[in-house]
Length: 395
Image (cartoon, rainbow, N blue to C red):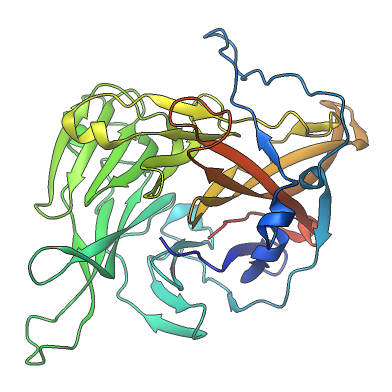
């Protein structure tokens, strides 16, 4: 997979209700040369922990000079490449004015709001492409890009389709699962022209089988080939074949990820956040899911060199995105207790900081176990406008 050049952030300002797509350059996350990257630090794998422990233990840090990758730099983002202000929708998502965005392929970003309106934006051409509305609003959506089949049914790597599902599935709400498909219009006489179509897709079988009929949460999801795999809390893992549009049950187990997992072809592994340690990167082989076998977690990495004054914060979710060629950006929220204030109810409260870190996975060399993969920490940065941000998405 080719490298995505940069990371894009969706910044949300609650006061002005403005959503801005802004650029975080790769230079802030990765060293430009192999010589500079040689000074980076490899992250250790977590040691085995008791099953009742909520956190993984990391090998104790050794007393030695800090690596350049341990330094935190504050960076200023350039002006937004795209801004949007959503209209409130009184009948959906509790009347909130929300915008969600997801990567499609290449430089294309998909936007949808709480009124089910949609559009695409090309970050390179700086051009917006209109698209049909979804059949129903998605209050907590996930979106997965799947290559569209070529004329002979092969995955040609050109056009992509976007499959959208609400991760809080309510059996009484219509169309929780649908897709935007890029294809010819059936009435068109032009063999070349394609356009976006919205298709309602079959409901996951657990929505009909679950007797209590209450809201069901999707805990993890990914794409294996052209099959979408989802794990539902307490109900097991299910597969949706995008070619036949049929669901099947893989097993009564959960995939070992929290949220989305992305495939890295160079390493033949899927990467995401660990379901047991949701603030730490994890790797597993999901190919066995299609055979009905439970995948095993292969690696979980931790960073023993974080400042001891930084405590994990619940002000925002950890997220990780694959940039191509085994490189990732992980976003973590911390409370910096160096700048803490006293709250009468909860005690000391630290200053919230959002840290972006560039990670690179290498195979075949080093002291890693199994096939010898190592996770290297490059640069870490925070952005100067953190106090203006309500939520973030890394694309």
